[in-house]
Image (cartoon, rainbow, N blue to C red):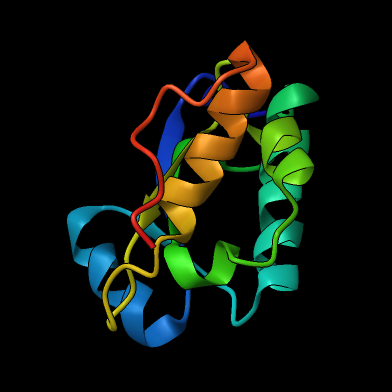
Length: 123
């Protein structure tokens, strides 16, 4: 078995045309074309960390293109982000921010503390 069990990487999940450029920065691109594919990739990443697998790459931080998270249920995001790893960051796509990242953050904050402490929606 590998001695690299404590080495964590950074990944980005999204369409190939957006994520491929991050490879030059040492970020590992993981292709996903829709919300279902994003959720499947995130669940696998979380499972590998939780099971402390040494035979796979593990990710401490995962960046996801925002518009692909729009239809992912908040409870699924909460399961994946429970615990210390992975940290999930939402990045706007080529068309700019659609507000999905902020909206999900507000909903998670409200669920966690019982009140929306973030600025109200301006839409």
